[in-house]
Image (cartoon, rainbow, N blue to C red; front, side):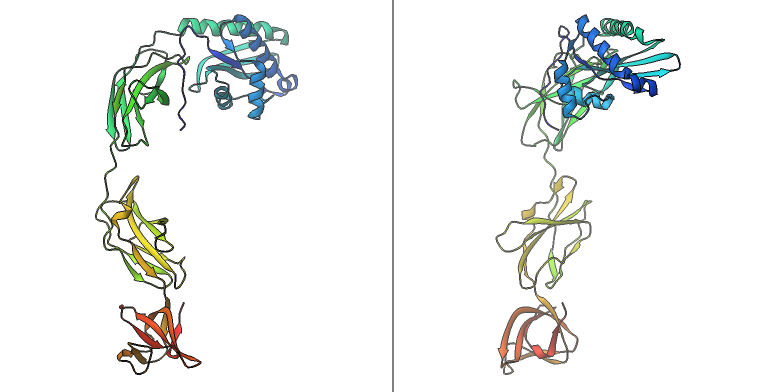
Length: 405
């Protein structure tokens, strides 16, 4: 997640707040747009009370327009999204319903920083003319709730400890005991006296910071935060360096068992528990190795190759974020050949001539590789340079063979 600099909300600061349009429930509420009426009156009374800082209306409309929420009722998820864009600490959302002879108003004050309710109020009135006075009363109740319940004396988290783990660091500290505690914010720096930036939050006294560089030392501080979004001072720092991942043994005895299309590889199965193997290939000597596939078996068929083209392969083992080194597996080079078969028994020779030594009698139906090189003999005849499946190289009369693939 991106690192975001979070400012501490001190007790002497006013909360930045906005009132979003309430949801209309019921046909009459929709027709009269009571959600907008209630939101307008609450926003007006909040501004007059001067207890909160109210975000400028034009700025709110600009953000809602950007999020395609303008003139729409706002739910909790949308309020949090818009609130973060507006850098709010709190927001007021809710619903209004008109049922029979009453207007029911549900009000929720939510903490934008953690998406949780701070307080809720329910009012029932009998006629529309009472909405303004009811909104005044609701604002008074909200301010009273903040004044009576907002414990500004948040204790700074104590006994911060760090534990080095593989590519991560786990933090722990003594839990705070405040009744209105919402959780903790975690801050990190790359030097003891540097700028500490927000990296995450938790409602437990435990946090793991992941995907870290084992070559770095990281410094941490923790702040407690209550349901209103007010934070304590940052704790005394502690530091740690992530552990490097353990190395896996290299893959052993990688060999090519078929040089024709498809090229087939196999290797020794790893004795230790692993997630699988990664196959790497270059499309020519000197090219960069690129990952082809992740598999679980200790063999692989590569069908995406062309005859007479050179390829190189490497195989590694992996387990989660751990991988055996690519360099620990020797590269296997193969020039892809065509697979042929003898049509009849004929001589397999050392050279492209009937006068050269016979290596053996090639039986009918024996398969072999054609390297791509041939020696023309007369206008319509030729010898093929071949390699038998057991690795013996020589020449075979083309008229006595046929290509299989």
